[in-house]
Each structure stands twice: as C-alpha cells, then as structure tokens.
Image 1 (cartoon, one colour):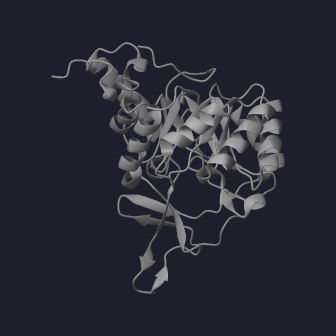
Image 2 (cartoon, one colour):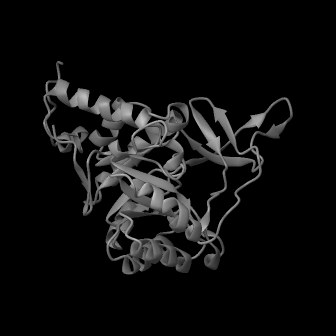
Length: 311
C-alpha cells in the first residue's frame, strides 16, 4: 500500500500533516506520539521578531468548533532557528514553516533565511495586513497576493513554497490560480473564518479581541467546497484544511481534490489524532482494495471510477 504523495518536489511518506498554530513547534506533542510517523509538521507561524499575541481570554468553544484570537504569538525567527528548529530536525519528518509579515520585505527576509537553513517547505500566511498598502490583506487583494508570491518565489531556491489562502473571498479559484501563476508550488486552504461569540451573562464578547478565527468541524463544508473549487482551476497540489477530525474527513478532502491534509483543532481534543487518521486511511484503502492513495485525489469529480461502491 503506497501512502506517499508529493507536494511539489517534496515527497511525503503519507498525506497527513499538522496545521500551523495547532501543534506548537512539534516538541509540545513529542511525548504523545512518534513525530516520525507524520507526513509533515507545519510549525506555528513565525515572524521576524517575537510577538506576544493578544490578551486573554483568546480561545473559546463554539457549537462544533472553536474561536481563537491568539494574535500570532511566536518566538520570532532568531529564537526559532536557534532553539526550535534543531529539535524538530531530529525526526524523519518533513518540516514546513508557516511565515507571516506586515510587508513584502518581511516575508522575503523570513523566506530567504529559512530556505538557507534548509527547511523542507515554507507556507505563506497571507491572511495578514500589508501595512505598506493601508492594511489591505495580502490574501484578499489579487495584485497584492500576486506580488507577494512572486517576490518570495525569487527568494526561495530549495524549499517548497506553499501559499495558505484566505477563505475571505468568493473567488477562491481565482486566488489559487494567482498563487500558481506567480510561482507557488502548492496552496493550502482554508485558514480560519472570522467569527464572534458573546457571553449573555456579561453582555461582553467571549474573546478579549472581540472577534477571532473559527475552526473545527463547523467550517469543514466550507473548506471542502473551496478545495473542490480551487482544484478545478490549478494543476499544483492542494493541502486541505478545516474541520478534519477523522480519517473519513481526510478522505473527503482528497476526493475533493486535495493531495494532502493538515489537521488542526482536532489536535487540541486528541493529541494523537493524526496517527488515528493515518491508520484510518490505511484501513479504508485496504477495504476498498486501493494500492496507491493517489487514486483518491480528485475522485469526486467523476474522473476516476469508485472502487467497490457496494462495500
């Protein structure tokens, strides 16, 4: 049974990775599972300088999901390279670093430094405001997104470049096409959806930041649709993200067109969920008598015949 998939030039032992911001820097979960078993680890978003994040409370549960307004808290590039990257490199698992900036120059500097350090992949978090353009979000302005991906592409020589698309557009296919046209090796989608919750006893928002990003099963149908739409417009791989709690969820994303999946909120509920999902995918492939997981990719488009539909 072949579980290997390719994200650009990057070969993954299986299609299951962790979503940025939900798995720390990998070390936090090492006591719970064998990190060597994962397809890839996408670490917490890294900025040039350390960020403290937003004040508490900054996480709350919602029906079928979770709201977070962490505020991109992280140790910064220097400390990541010095203390975090050496640890995670001990494992035989691909390391993808999510990066964020407030200007194109910041993204370029981050990408160039990480590429020089030999990380396997760089994921651009484009759901950030461009301070040089009046706060326009990189991921919701066509020209801004294209310019960012193009500049970072020129700075990255070896690492696979992934663009994590924002869900805050009805034109997700077009934005995926822009990422591909400007040199992205793959796209990941979706990021969290802006949302809010209010405490009816205090009459105050449940988050100190008032609003946050919604994740978990509540956003899965939205994410699945966007993966399917994007897959119909691009030829580069897609990493599906959003509400993946089970192997069945992961398989749905692959049938919709994803080459790999990233598990997020589920890590907070069950720290070994990624391993459960990998094992569940194996059982599904065995049941369906599928020898290569690549046969699943895009299967819902009717291009590939369903295996043993009566099973």
